[in-house]
Length: 240
Image 1 (cartoon, rainbow, N blue to C red):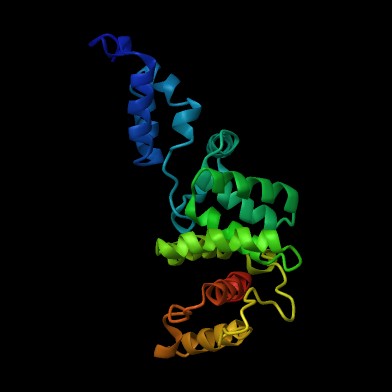
Image 2: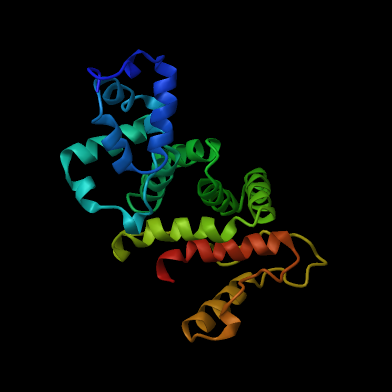
């Protein structure tokens, strides 16, 4: 390409912007782009580009890429530079499969800080599970409330479900809820403490194909009880 045009003389930041645009389409497009010329190959390895590359959903991810040494090193490099989606997936595996909580917690926080909604959802669930830490539960509820207002909860839950169920069932070790877990402290709330029972009812109805299995806790007005319902669902994710 360099022999036929002077595109290589463009400023590097322009090349990086082009590479990011290509990378956000697919990994394959980024690979094709890197093959066009030396400059493209160089900027294709830029941290800003690797942090933006589009990652397929877990069930669509080509496992050949992960088993191949080159593909594996590519994904590891993306994680090292802080790719939010890959950080989120790896965080869930560290937390609930490898039981490496400190590493998983740090990765989950970083992915959430980078603005990934699914990471914020998982982080809110972790915080709400800290029954003895009122500050953590308050922070988790605020995160949950933000996602709920934006109608982002279904997509967030699906992302967590996809990551954890793509592994062998015996590998996934979800956190314990506790016998009397509840995040609702309002004495006037009619649904206080009953979200576990509601979740079991909804799950069994869904297994039977009943219309009562649809909707979850969307009709519950108390945001704390809706969060509690979501915690029940998140913790039971590997057994749904």
